[in-house]
Length: 388
Image 1 (cartoon, rainbow, N blue to C red):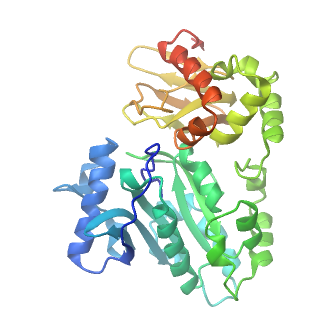
Image 2: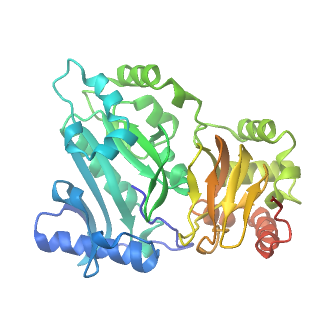
């Protein structure tokens, strides 16, 4: 997945005829490749490998056998996504490893259908990022997967997008991996038959899924947690309450979060709880994870909860302390990171997402204004504390 989903505050999509199609001709595919280039390279300034850029087209080997979907209004592409459906041996070895396809293959033992689906290259044009285009594209991928009797749809995204994909119904799995040009990626899986989970997170895809008659919900869910017990401890942003999240943060930091985290200073406890529950998520990192890469754009505010993170720039190397933020602040603007941040131990990061903040700002302007005031202080550097 991992597309560009930055919001355009206050924009309402005009009513224009919309279609979602599968690209079949070379011309349609070239138009999608150009749309990707405009989004990733021109808009997001992604530092991508030259081998996948050609004459303002962006493509790779998986396009050769994937289904390329696009949303179009009039003659303009306003969104696209790629889905690859196949057997494990059809996917690149590195993806088989990071997605743990060998472990998921165990579910298919004795079953006829053994295909997996992988969703990537999801993106929406700037003026349509507050619309339903993203959900239309994902719903079409869900329907295609069901047609091939796929039980597991995989994907991956940067940390700041995790709230969005957990809202849709995906779960985090395994360890993060670095995708050059795209940054640190958290692997995800969608259990196609897990109706209860879709209902609990209020997934927009549930409206389509509940119409299916061939669903074996509990079987796949029970199998997943038996096979992947290590992922049962993930803090899902859509299933945790305000109070529960606050308790988790209190336990990690050893003190009231508003006393430790500078961005919360001056907020009453109830307001701080509401802000964090609406805009944040807890991400798990492992030794060697490069959380930020110098030159990559920032779409979040990272705050260390536990463990150790080392930041390094041209002239210095420092250690981040729990409660401190690191990396550039990308809640409003999207500045490029100027330092690399690497986890040197297992760590947990509180990630404040740029994608969630504009909606919160419109709904709770007083709380948001205090947060913005604190951010201005952080940006000036007066509250950043690092240990040499």
